[in-house]
Length: 304
Image 1 (cartoon, rainbow, N blue to C red):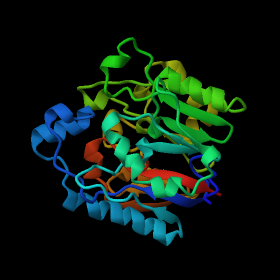
Image 2: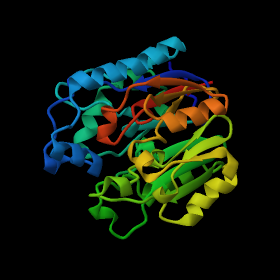
Image 3: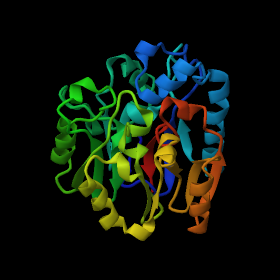
Image 4: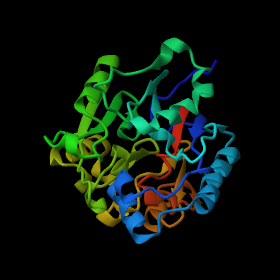
């Protein structure tokens, strides 16, 4: 059996699900776009193709091999985008929680059923139907669980609003001994630079007490200030609107000392090195055109 254990974003990674770009399917139509960034590239005729994305994901897998991480990959579904495994489920402590995702993505869960079969059944949780929650909005920080949400009255009209307050309250009820803090995120169906699709698009901890943050990703300054007070202004790397667009906050930690980052994130990667991190740089710019990057592609199962 798989003994799940994830309490934060940065402890030493031992086992992870990494998505796949193989048999990724055709370029979506404009009507089928899930987010404004993908829509931009569909309209421009530069939406990423399988031949460019497969090497990017394999570069990520090579880094995991270097650090002796056990990697699970989804079973292949023909003509299906299976890159973003963070969307479909996530682990808190020793619970595997399925996301209530967009209906046509249910088959992505079936593709990792062989992993789920290795987990104690009582630890596999399916939330009730009114709960909307995706792993990109759920961020663990020891006694804290940070959750991105959207509190606007137009929630039903925004395909970019992925986690609702039912989702937040579900996690609060499930983990009464944790500090569950929700963050009201900026959303846009049409302007990519104004859209924080998930919490990890505008914030992520790295190391033991540092983080990457984009102030304008939060609708309320009080939410931004909560993180500044918790982490300390001097420990936060502030990213610009353009840097959020390119997904600077969507890196991935293999340990408190090692961060996997996109090779073009020069300003961030220099800051990480200045703060004594080992930075494993890989190409991931084609995948980023789908408004997802390194954290989005992973589902940690075990951290030491």
